[in-house]
Amino acid sequence: MLDFVISALMALTTVATPASGVELRGTAWIGEQRAANVVVWVDAPQAPVLPPPARVVLDQRNLAFSPHVLTVRVGTSVEFPNSDRVFHNVFSWRDGKRFNLGMYPVGAMKRQTFDRPGLSRIFCNIHPNMAAYVMAVDSSYFSVSDAAGAFTLPLLPQGTYTYHAWRPGGATLTGSVTLDSGTAFEIHWS
Amino acid sequence: MTVRLATRTTAVLFALLATSQIAAAQTITSEADLTAGFSNQEVEAAAAQIRVFGEIASRVQYFVEVALAAESGPETDAFSGAYPYEPGTRLIEAYGERLMQAGRLVGGVRAGRFRTPFGIYNRGEHSYNGFLRAPLIRYDEYFALSNNYLEHGVAAFFGTSHLLVESSVGAPADVGEARRRSGTDTTLRVQGYGGPLIVGVSYIRTQPYLPSTFATGRAQFTGIDARWMAAGVQLRGEWLHGRPFDGVSTDGGYFDVTVHRREMRQVSVVFRAERLDYETIPAFAMYARRETLGARIKVAANVTMQLDVIHQSSQVAYGYPWALDVGLTYSLRR
Image 1 (tube, chains in turn yellow, green):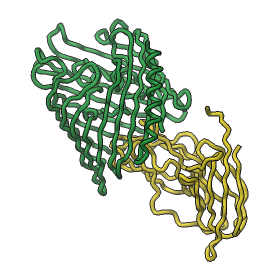
Image 2 (image 1 turned 45 degrees about the vertical axis):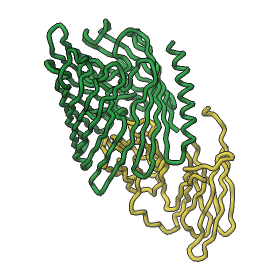
Image 3 (image 1 turned 60 degrees about the vertical axis):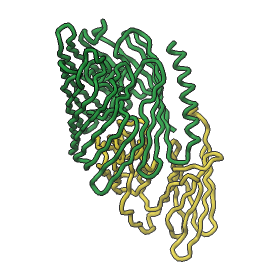
Image 4 (image 1 turned 90 degrees about the vertical axis):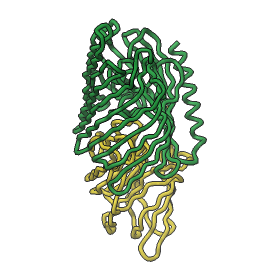
């Protein structure tokens, strides 16, 4: 069952915004289906660093992590509140940031800073069916696809960038994209 | 017989999981655990639990769990972690819950059918955590409490994450071998949390599960429980004192440790030491001791093996001072 062949098609289109740059929009696909929870980011060292959001939260609610896939810029502190009636124990021991926040009850909240780029797999030791991903990227320009597979990156100056795309269970794709009005390209996973 | 039942159980399980997709209007998650196991105490067991839970509205949740099981072999307490293993299908929990949070204050009300809120009582802390047997103080027929005690009633909690008070009022609605007589139950639990430590004190006043011909009065227990966790090491303990009915008393508890550190990869190691002293006339008194060393091993995606080696005193050994329990669990979430 696990050795099925997955192909993905990611159609990216760019929409020029006259004042500030180009908004990169796209849709992620796995085979013929739209793919949710695909992380897309671009390397943009020359672009302005965007201000981080006031709070970045990975909630534990209804025996699940929410969102299932979270993308943050390296150095971001993520809040892990326990919004369930039962105890949870958040930990990540494989790749990326390694930590164990211990066990804590409803109403309590712990924080973890993701200070290096990479993927962290998040689990709860009490509820083995709970799992989430935190992708820390060295860029302000990232997005996660929604249920319809759609994603939108923040405005970028026109130019050529290296992009990356990752999804749970899939390989990370890397390529080049030139952003100007009318640019479009496809990516295939095989 | 066990295999046949397990096959039927699997079919029911997947049918229910498929059905749960239909009701996708609100948030809905379905889970299933399918377990098969054996013990050298000539016991084979198979079981499945199906859970459906989600949110009806923001912070208004529901939870329903059904358990199916079969067990063959002589009487033992093998495979009794958090569910009954007598043959049949049972509704375990079915409740709605409203959770509230305002600043540091948290509260909630739960109504329906739920596990008796005393001590360490949540399903997730007793099932498939590396131990295949319930603690002696939480096994059906050992004159204390039971992990299969259920309430039909209302429970409420209020406080902060650091100090929480929980109380319930209900009527017994137990599953398993020991079922309390009808009546009114009350529980009270106070829980403190700070750093890596969580400590609780619980009280229950309920009905005895034994016949009224000789078990008169009310069952009453007071307990203390603690959890400590740091660096992948979890220590837990529970101790209770009380009486299962008038004229007798029960003391007992357990201490367990779970170690799951990064270098152990897919393996968690568990150990538990426990005792139970039931004081009555000498002919019926019970002084049980048990030590368990085990492991929970993730052997494949969604498949977990549990392996326990048990040393036990004669009164709970049923002729086996040493026992080996093995369980294999397939878990699914959609």
